[in-house]
Length: 376
Image 1: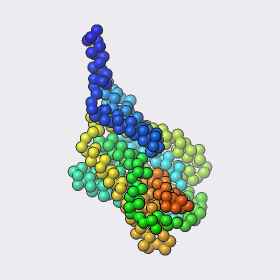
Image 2: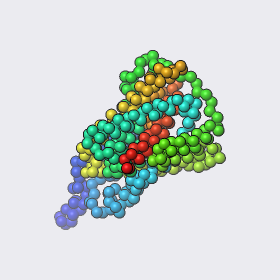
Image 3: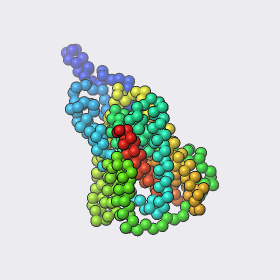
């Protein structure tokens, strides 16, 4: 009887536990808490947090349970991450729910989305300086774009062994936009600048909205062909939305499809943070670089907006430059919130959406450029 009990005990997680699993289970619980109690990107943090719990239950190797075991269910679901399937599906949904009107009304604001991508390339150089290989540095750099699906897509192509830490870093900083960005915004702008009111944008015609995703796709993919899977789905989703006659498909893309892809991506990425694989020196470096890249991207957008004001007759509120990172729509909301603290009657949300959506395009192009450079 004692031998039977011991055999049973040796098969339990209480016997197989490792402090690294416990650390990651605690981190998963923190993610769930932030998602539910603080409302920080709950659609991302709750699936990722619970995925961390799933991935860090101690199990016997060889039973076909772990995400890194070839014959496990989790491994098959994780295939959508490692092969870059889920991110384009999410981009399809994002395109189907995005309104490019403010960007079309004032195309010059697209430059702010481009400026924020400096965080990507500066982090790439920083990762190289810290000893990461070129492919790894490129994957780490894309965290600065503040775009989780893009980060996962590029990492799956260039450094699949880093998907866990890079995905968690990217989504963590996306969720913490309301915490990270406001201090940088206050530091780099004066109160007078934060009080600037922007003129109402012109009305954009339906024809312009329909033509834009087609032209944008062709031009951007001629510039960076490797961005085709992401930008193709983004622009296609937007065309479905604007064409009206395909509204049924657009509704599916921005509701059921994106929700399913987000759930599967979140849970499997969370499960990939298996303590004995995830907790490494490289992971710590990635988190530090991720924080720096996000801060640099925010600062670049703000500073470029201030530079633009030196040449523009009609000034723009430099706060909207912070929305150049592609955390849609959270960074635009934060810009609006910071602006309203200075003047409750100043509405910046609509204006901030222009650099915000251009940041999505910019991060996809940056990923395409890095992928094409590292592939040779």
